[in-house]
Length: 127
Image (tube, rainbow, N blue to C red; front, side, top):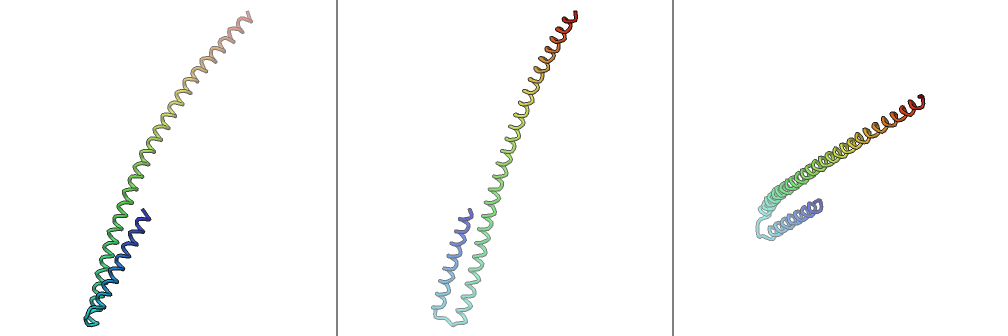
């Protein structure tokens, strides 16, 4: 986008410079009084300046709109990706917790069995 903006500016500047040079040369070779020629050159320069300012404003506004459009799209995609990552992380955390709870319960049950077996063996030895 930056290259296109620079190229458009260079083309615009070239066109305006060429137009200004053509107008000046045309007026200098026209058979009129010097005062009148200078006035026409000044008027034309003022017109060209106005056109350049207008064109700059249009190009600037278009670049601003494109920037805002791209920025909006990037923000939207970031929000979507962020939401997907959060959702996936929540699912992984839930799955890990479920697995932990399941194996914890099994470990407690086995430990209880082993303790019961040991107690039974100890009771059997005392008798």
